[in-house]
Image (cartoon, rainbow, N blue to C red):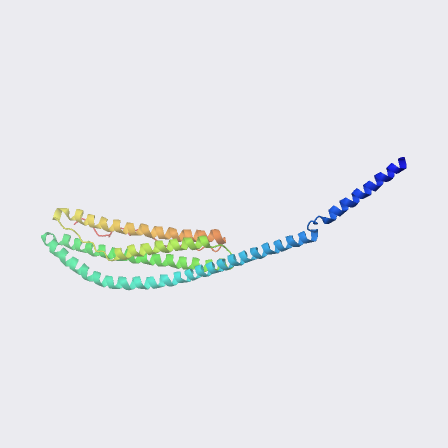
Length: 275
């Protein structure tokens, strides 16, 4: 009897196992490891292609930007030279016109000095009048020469920036500083051009107030020149900032601003104002 039960249990167990195997065989099998591996490889390749495409786009954009900046730097030099010549031509024309104005002004001064009895005082005042015009011309010419030096420095910074960029140095900060310096120089040129065409007439009231009258006109000239000179200092600092930006980006070959550049107004005419 015991054997019969054992046989029945065995039969039932085998039957259950067979049923389980049959059900298992009908259930869809999961993706094989090789298929998962292939899918991962495909995703990886796709991601790699997208990354490469992005890199190429960035590289192309970077190259386009570099070419644009390089072209801007080349145009900077040409722009300086062109504007320098244009300013020179304008000043030559205006100085010719200024000569006529100065002659008229001196004739008017002589008429105003007719009320002065002392001939020596008349001569001193006329000499001061000439010196004021001469001083204005001398200083504005010197300021223009200083601006030319600053432009030359800025051009050299641009040229060295091209070299640094070719070695892979990020020069975007240098380009921004150069543009700012260029704008500052343009602002000064306009101010100097206006100042160069000014004349200063001596207001003559009475003989005992000659010194006061002359002093007022002289101070006016000095104040005007100081304003323009301060603008030159701003331009000089802007160029120096461009040089500093170059130094930070590149680390060497820093262009130095010439210490001989002077933007201070010259002293007053060395003519006695004690008529």
